[in-house]
Length: 276
Image 1 (tube, one colour):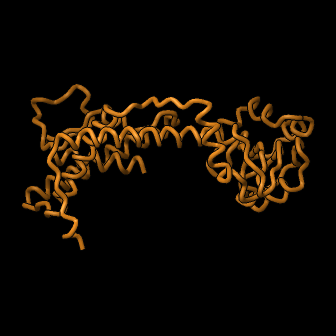
Image 2 (image 1 turned 90 degrees about the vertical axis):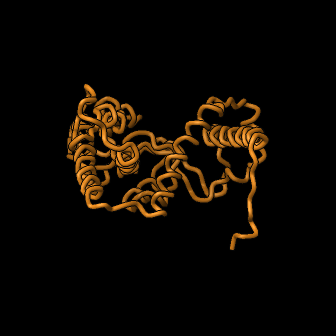
Image 3 (image 1 turned 120 degrees about the horizontal axis):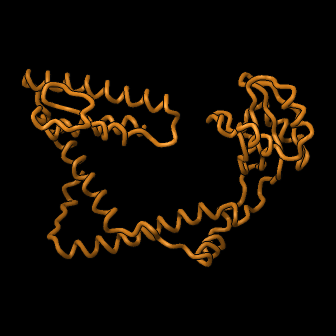
């Protein structure tokens, strides 16, 4: 989604800024279509950090290819006299405004709202019912090994901490969205794949399961805790959620204050009676 948004933004920026003259070509030029060009820095900034080098390279090539194709089509459309509709011009203008609005708010609103321990505790107490479990949950450590390895399997059998094995063999660096390796925290048991649900339900606290075979490989699970539906989540488990909520509330309060202050400087009229 982020990549699609960037490509749209990059293409739109080219449409809005017009062509750049070849005599003004930047040193970090990475693609060019007639007098329009794309800079290396624009592409680099679009790729998220922490990705494998081969993934980054593939994404960069895709961005460049997309920009070149869009620029060719755009210039062809201009030559044929194709113009924006009023609705499209409205959308473009709104998009430009939204960029400035976001930058203005980022400059004006405090980004480092502090939340005290008392505020966290008060919010927890005021919303205590929100933190009651609606389904059975388990705190588990999960490990997926794609190919059978008897030496590691025997080591797991003798281990009391699955995380030690995960760290030792760098399995945490091989996590996938479908099968993450490591401490998963508390998960809703019914959200687990069927082949793991029964395993988790039958484990004793602290125990590591025998391997469970799936299409992905061999799964091991260690149960750290079990909590039934209707039990209360401890404040430490929901602390981060509460902090995010309180920071958002503080930002909203500051936004309202800023808007009240700005409205005093402008003449504003709305005609809601015309809205149908």
